[in-house]
Image 1 (cartoon, helix red, strand yellow):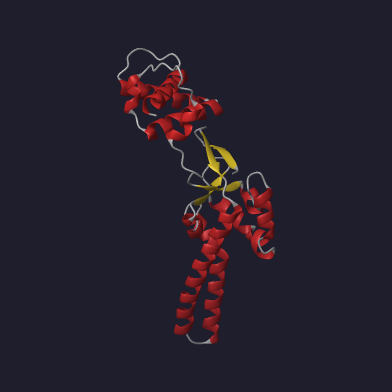
Image 2 (cartoon, rainbow, N blue to C red):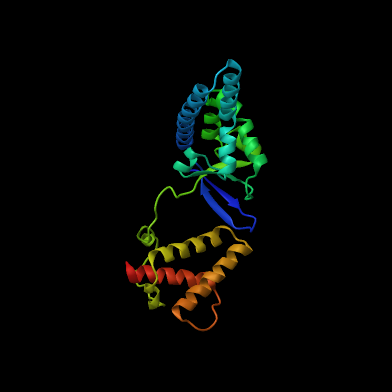
Length: 242
């Protein structure tokens, strides 16, 4: 699965999984089904409650405008999501790491006509399926991407045990077994991000994690190599609990 790394305004790199074309299509279908039902119910009530061709024409235009602007309104007021995207845990984000604003959503929305409606979705499908960041024209213009808000698979501490060799391994901190799998997965993530993104923000996160672990274990003295210390804790935990 394709991923994208986004640097936040605090210079912290966050890795997202890019939404598959299949799920983006399903989200669009869900949105269209919801809109169609709402359109039929509201439109039927309004048209049945008024008389005169002029008034009915106004209602028809209003409903048409609702169809045109529904995606823009939902994505703006739902912070980068629509009902379909929310159902599939998708979200629109800015690749620059900033919060997407109204102008960004307008940029995406303006090119729906080309990407989706005029080309029957063919342009959007081709670009999303072939581009590195899974972007249609609207995404490219707005510098946005559609990502998952959930991991594509669950990872447990047992799945990473095989990456450590416990033969003849000497445990340093027996107190490490007091931690939980979820805590050790967070620790592993901190180490990996610091190794992958070498910047001050991740180094600071590593130092803070080392200090928290030190306090939890009741250790005294200075830790001279936070990375090595945390890796030792992780190795000790795996050997003691496997």
